[in-house]
Length: 474
Length: 158
Image (cartoon, rainbow over all chains, first blue to last red; front, side, top):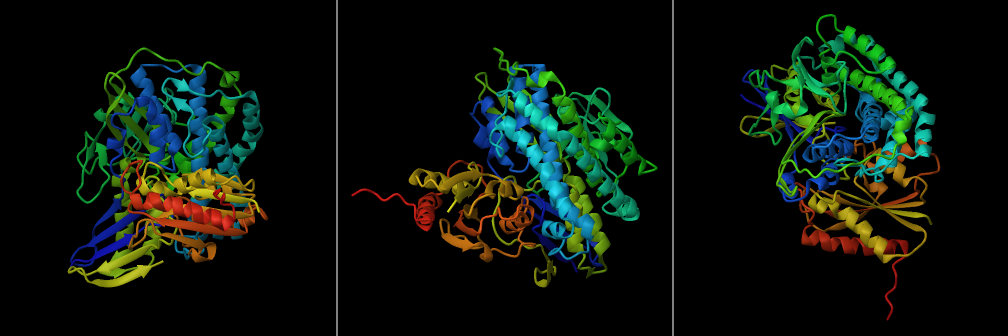
């Protein structure tokens, strides 16, 4: 007898997901599929528009990481113009990017992940949420709001409209940072760094206290990918692509981002709207790799700033052989990155160059292809545009973090499902645990769609003939 | 009464942009000094920062109904929305949970009166800056209803 279990949608991840678990004849997990909805027609919508419009269009496809799309798009535009940015423009782009990291990682940790860690995965979802956190640990929730607001404020300074930033343009930036704004950032940054360090310690303590679970929960071998700088440190805005294997050994390094196609290939599956990128020198699906905080920290050799560098070393020592491969380590990696980017913000505003006025330049060139690659908070983001001689878009290809992690997330769901379904018995804890596993990856399911209303998490157990046997709701 | 009319949506996702269009129409149809109109594509904590300091909040947003009647407008109150813990907007948390959170974080700064105008959509799966006819027409009706609620509709001169 074959049964199908459907879970939809997953609460508290960005967008809507739907999980189908296919059981074999003995009632054990045969395969798990995470379906991701994607909006249609983006490429068609962009065709014929000028490449210079793309940095204001692409942020609208995602209400969660608009700054990342904005910057990747501007970088693709720089490549089309064949321009190397002025030092100040480069610094302002980094400031914007790091601010997005701080706000995005703070939001994810305090608002979405901390309830799981504080109350445990088995806690009632009615309690396991931000309202529960504010009741039990109001000072923690306040810190989350404060750190996030700090990042948002910088985005607002540079990007004017916070939801759809308008700061970077092909060739540079369209607004300089005023000295008074620089002072405002400098006044608050030490406090933000100290709260970030506290957040790292919070997750670190959790992992130390729950080491067995952290090492076993949704834990599996994959490769890892991320950008690194010329000292092999984690890089967020520029640098070269690096790929490491399950033990952290280098598979590929010093790959110019525009040569990303030499590393990865995309596979289409008929049951998912989202493609499955994989490392092309390995077969599919063995070529699965992970991106995002865990991908970056497992690929790089260190972090660029003193406090984060120390935490990086401790993070890597948590696994005696190889690198941490449990999905829960994403949370710790995320907080180390929040600390790293906060420290980077501090060093940026310490330089007088940040308030320079030389922020944009043009060229008479229109290259017919431009590729912009950055590390978005959720992982490597690739914008690849082809344009005609006038600069009108002919073709757009975007590879987003959730795509890179697609294979790994399916694996995580499958592993957790196998733990909670044995010989046809479905443990009610499966809902919470699958939700927690997916949330580690902080996926962005359907960009920018939103709805007010009730969206419960639901498991439907069906017979092979489609009859509903059982429905589990949270 | 210090009122915020907040349109939520994404204007390149078809009918999902209707909340923004409602807000724009409201802005054009009133000069009442106590009404502020804002637009956002954000949810969750983003909303928390936008709605602080108002006595009344009126939200306009698209909804995806199980049995959709595109253009159908419903006025709801916060109590009509589902339980704070389980009512999850896909992004960062529901309006209900945001206001609950705001009451603790910023005592006395959350709007005491909240109404939500939902407009049912014909679908939000395709990237386009055009809305369906039914939803476009509903934007005007929703804007009028909102201004009637505020008693601030500019009377047409005879």
